[in-house]
Length: 300
Ligand code: PAF
Image 1 (tube, rainbow, N blue to C red):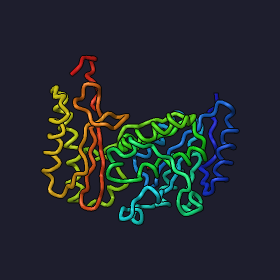
Image 2: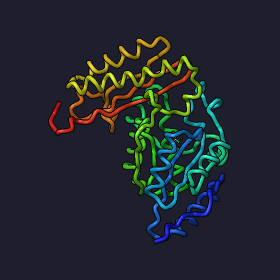
Image 3: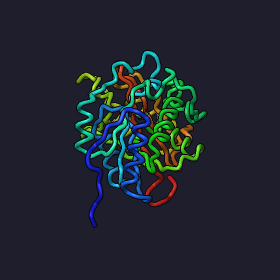
């Protein structure tokens, strides 16, 4: 059996051209074609590559979007300074043999300047990060819905590091009956535990070392949970102790929540998402882990 692939990486910047390229790529593989989409804001790192490689394993055609979506940044956030290493990203996507790259301008995505229709996931969208970034998840859901309509993927790949984003998008896909499946890939970390993020490049050496407190706080919770501490308040206190021992850390939240609703849990018997967000200097970082129910199925 010969494995069919598309010849080269094609980069498209208009919605019409991307739709045509997706239709053509699908045509090359026939009715059973699986098209995978990896939505990104560029500044690609190993975390993104793990999503692309997961998409390559499961899909016949892989599309990556690169769009620094202005509407999901509040005034005063890092939209202007968000890294845009376009040439490096293009080289990486070619080396990964991505089939289609969609890199539209803001004018192409929002011809009227701002979105004229919005996708809102109320409740979930105002929890965790949504509580501190008003309107952020409405903007994320809106741009991802647009990307889904433009590309028409069968599978879409996101990173677990953005756990609240995942919960919002799962609800959007379910409630609005998008005919696709979400795949959520594990967080990729540096050898010392720091979760990869395009924003890590803002950190000085000292701040990077401070930022490790996020991972240490999650690890402290894991150790306590493994030792059968199930009380979320006690676990949360342990996290805060670690975070507050780092002088340059301004904690936004350190919570133990249900991964689907993002509502706080009293205990971790049913599995839990332990999530943290903090500013180190002017850089906002997030991280999280899951605490699964005990492996043998017994309740903690
Ligand atoms: O996770 C991101 O990079 C962005 O929020 C996304 C999903 C590409 C939407 O702009």
